[in-house]
Image 1 (cartoon, rainbow, N blue to C red):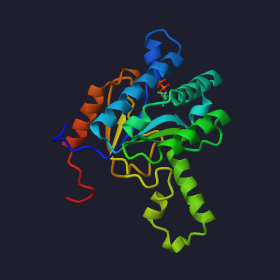
Image 2: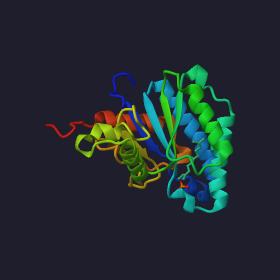
Image 3: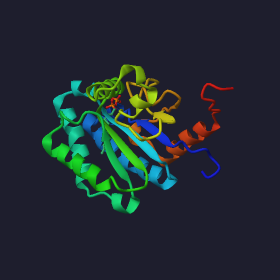
Length: 230
Ligand code: FPP
């Protein structure tokens, strides 16, 4: 992939787990289990490609409306992943969770806090997992933070808002990939995606492979990115 223009920050909407399971007459939770495997594979490939930052949309502010059993199964997948010990040291990955983690179970929050602290000093790929995340909520949270800190509205800038989002300090997202055939943003990184390229793919998330990621990056590098210029 050397001659390709690599995106600095990739956002991925992990969609299609339910349909993947339904096609196989399995419970929806089986789709999420397979989706978590696809997540691991995709993160691994981002690390190998040297991607600076990748954000996975794992649970939106709207996903609480799902049956309790499904919500619990997804939370358990996060928890199991954090229990694995991970290879973060070797891979030098910085793990972060973006979104409002306050409503999560104490034990899960504790694990999130631990991995965040343990990997904060690493220097490799930054992996954001968006949990209880919504783009509008992200902006609202940033603006509330600025007001609470006594910001003067006349000196407020786009940079000051960017600097108070959950993704503060990270580059804006360059490429957003949505598998599963849906062509929506679903409240994902809406501020950060002002100049992003979108790649929509027909594959369901649990089947998403390294080749699919390579294909999306190739599509990205083919597009002429002009940032409003000529
Ligand atoms: C959307 O597909 C998927 C989710 C709401 C859950 C995503 C979670 C995972 C893939 C697990 C991630 C695990 C780790 C460790 C980060 P959907 O259920 O809405 O699919 P559908 O549209 O086909 O019903």
